[in-house]
Length: 315
Image (cartoon, rainbow, N blue to C red; front, side, top):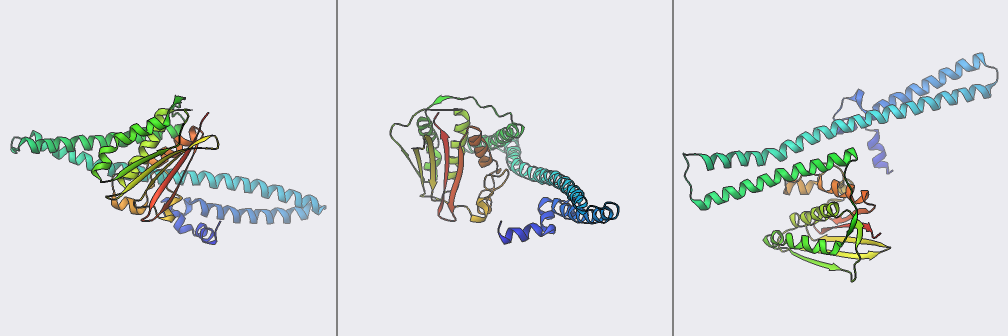
């Protein structure tokens, strides 16, 4: 742990603000109070022991046992309050994100339907088509958010189904690149795929892996500027398949990279550019990859681009 992080952990006021709880419910502050209590209790027990027990080694042993028991209790209590504080923080973030993400498409749906069904406003068929397209887009946004929330709920409960079967990841990637072709073309972005020769089939859950690849390609397109480039590689390495996707887009600030796979987290520069994201996609990707026995990580430089990697066992 760096000195900066150590001193940050001692700043109880900032910690409490991050969790959104009062000082007397802050885990770090409670742990400090328990520490003071343990010191006082140990000192008192030692003084009482030396008065009634002649052998100082027995007194020291008793005092050590009492201290150890109290310390374990303090850690358990502190961790319990920390989990409660994190749950409270995540609940607030969840409400903020969901309400924000749903408010915009619902408002657009409301106005669109009112215009289309109103007798007061008459519009040409071309204009109606625009409203219908807007209705479809906003409906898709809400469905996407609900789908992400359902997956997250199953991950949290440990009920996310994994149905393993043999499939060809190379073919899956090619199909997804074709599907995202129009979206990339509209953004003037070029996608290239570079698979190794003779990529073997893997034994995993194709439906879950598809969600991961979809998320990574979608993010790469969304956060890459016009005339951008996205490269995708598929390699065989150490009896595993190594997937890599690289873009020359916005990049992720170094301070945000350690949090990028956390639930509801969005990099600051990305959240300013695109307000649509829920901060769930990469959390879902990490959970799925780890559940099927792989690993996922990233490399990124601000304003230079981002590289995401994941591995999957071949057998």
